[in-house]
Image 1 (cartoon, rainbow, N blue to C red):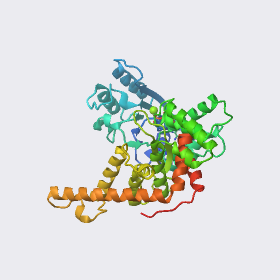
Image 2 (cartoon, rainbow, N blue to C red; image 1 turned 90 degrees about the vertical axis):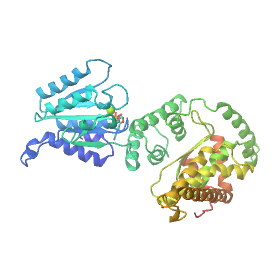
Image 3 (cartoon, rainbow, N blue to C red; image 1 turned 60 degrees about the horizontal axis):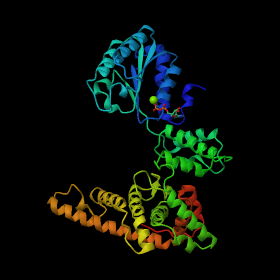
Image 4 (cartoon, rainbow, N blue to C red; image 1 turned 30 degrees about the vertical axis):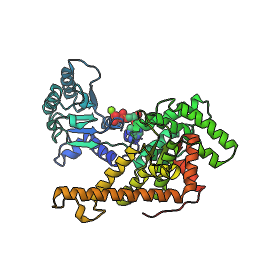
Amino acid sequence: MNAFDEIIGYSAIKKELRQISDTLKNKDVYASLGVSAPKGLLLYGEPGVGKSLMASAIIEESGRKVFTCRKDKPNGDFVKEIKATFDKAAENAPSIVYLDDMDKFTNGDERHPDAEEYVTVQSCIDEVKGKQVFVLATANNIRCLPRSLRRAGRFDHKIEVSAPRGEDAEKIIAHYLKDKKFVDGVDARTIARIMDGKSCAELETVINEAGLYAGFERAEAITMNHFMEACLRTIFDVPVGNNDDYDDDCDEECENAQQNNSLADSTKFLSQIVYHEAGHAVVSEILCPESITLVSAHNRGGESGGFTDYYNDHSFAPLYWSKSRIIGALGGAAAIEQKYGIFDAGCDRDLDFAFDRTRDLVVNNCVCGLHLHKNMYEDSQRLWSEQEQAVSAEVEKYYRKAKEIISLNMDFFEKVATALAKKRLLSAVDIKQIKSECKIVPVAL
Ligand SMILES: Nc1ncnc2c1ncn2[C@@H]1O[C@H](COP(=O)(O)OP(=O)(O)O)[C@@H](O)[C@H]1O
Ligand SMILES: [Mg+2]
């Protein structure tokens, strides 16, 4: 096993790292072809995506001595430290200078192209040219770095590291689950869909956090509920103890209703939040199965109401997906009209989303005809007003579709709402289970 094997997934990046490391280890092979080894590599991307892990693998596999420079204290002599690091690396060549989190070398997150620190790094790189010193750097935000520093000849290779997606995310999650005691049925795929786009550091933290909740409850194993709770707190910023009053009231009411064993009674007590979110979930699941990752009746920090989270599923045709997302967003308001016969006063965010997305479809994708395309050479005021009329009519149409989907699938809708009122949080697994118990009426777009 070598150091690259510790990096899970990211096969394309690993291949490139292996090649770079080979040029550092076997310089004669490349010299015989008349080419020189690359002078530097810059790994950049969001925090927690594995840049330092990848840098460590290159360092380890290259077999070279490494001299690290990292701004971990606010000292005034940092420029001297940078110079000293390069000097030591040059004395000990072949070697590596490792500049970790280089975008933090100056103060603040703003761009400082002329900052003394960057000017120093740049001149130091130029000074060690031809001395077999490889410069390896990581940065979260490369826009902070001057272009002259990033250019080829200084950093010949630049690799963007993004949060893991799809199979990569599943593999990393499976790795973190391996040594944890999870109950059967908790699978990496479901977790990967909920955590889509999150960094490795976040994946690791949430999975561990789920274990801490289980331990505190003295549970024998970690369940999906522990994981979902950890997700809510860590990813969606739902504060600890949120909605306690609502939870207590709802618990009592639901328990009474359940003693009467009547779905109608139990749903009677459910709040508008629950029906609103159930509307999003049902409409989205009918149009795009497995697109919902979680539905919550808890509110996020600073926002009112619950929330529904979606998996950005690229297997659907883009236009179908866009329309479905708009109809799904209108599902919350459609549910309230269906249930209470009133228009939902608290859905302005959903409406903003629906109008913005629909406008995009009308003016860019020409869903209402070419004559409304943004590039039409028309009197702009007239074009704009025709576009807006078309957008309103489209949104109305999508809203009617959302209502139709709910009314044809009332059993599914009521069961999701009931389960949500009881558990406050439903995962993709719960939704799938409920769906399997209902008669589903598909609706075409
Ligand atoms: N591809 C990966 N495979 C396994 N663990 C990873 C991977 N990427 C990141 N990690 C782990 O995630 C955490 C954060 O990674 P790190 O390299 O410090 O991120 P960055 O430097 O981008 O902020 C570390 O515990 C690291 O080991
Ligand atoms: Mg790092």
